[in-house]
Image (cartoon, rainbow, N blue to C red; front, side, top):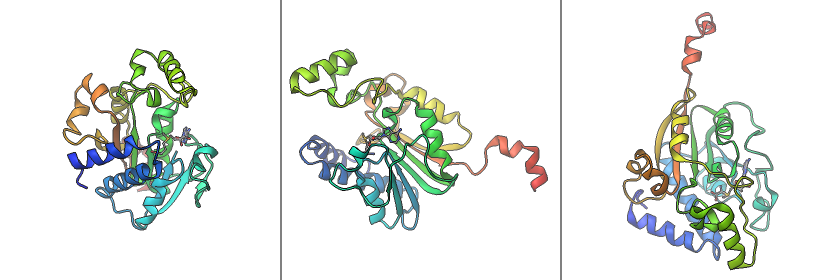
Length: 256
Ligand SMILES: C[S@@+](CC[C@H](N)C(=O)[O-])C[C@H]1O[C@@H](n2cnc3c(N)ncnc32)[C@H](O)[C@@H]1O
């Protein structure tokens, strides 16, 4: 499906609404869509693709279906085995400290994980470290002020996390999966974009709303509005071949 387009966004929205009853359908469609987004920048066939925080592996599966050699890194065994079995080629590992050498991946992929880590910049540095120069880093996250920022207790997070969690418990009789400051963190679009743009080791290929059917890039450029209207920010970064500091280094002159 063409991205962005109303048809695509409606299909994703419908699948998302059925996430609780039919998670496989929802995540298979989302994985297909994310792989299409990546393939607009780089074909996946024969690439080494690392999926960090990939849950039960729908994205890894889709990358493999397209001919990539893909590995899943996920720290939570319950997430990893949510479909009954642990997917082949998966590693129980934390995204802060990936058991991978520098620059091995053609693509480092992380969907909807950044809002679940306390230090997103350090997490991002690790994704960049394992990506080869010229390779891509795909990162998306739901920001705190998005209508979906509170996850299962959204949109009541606008009234405060504690109140929203208490309401969820009252309504469902179950404690919410996410707790602010424990496994969900208030991440914002403006500061994230500034931090990414300031980095010397990556260039920004695209910053856009992941799901919007129109104005997907424009919406991320308007301070204030972008925090509410972007919904979910998608960043595609390219690892630079050489940072400015390396180019200025006296070692470089002696090497060459
Ligand atoms: C909302 S799920 C996203 C799953 C999948 N990537 C997707 O887009 O559907 C967030 C995932 O991030 C994982 N996660 C949380 N902290 C992490 C960390 N430090 N390193 C790697 N993954 C982490 C969780 O275990 C969970 O599987």
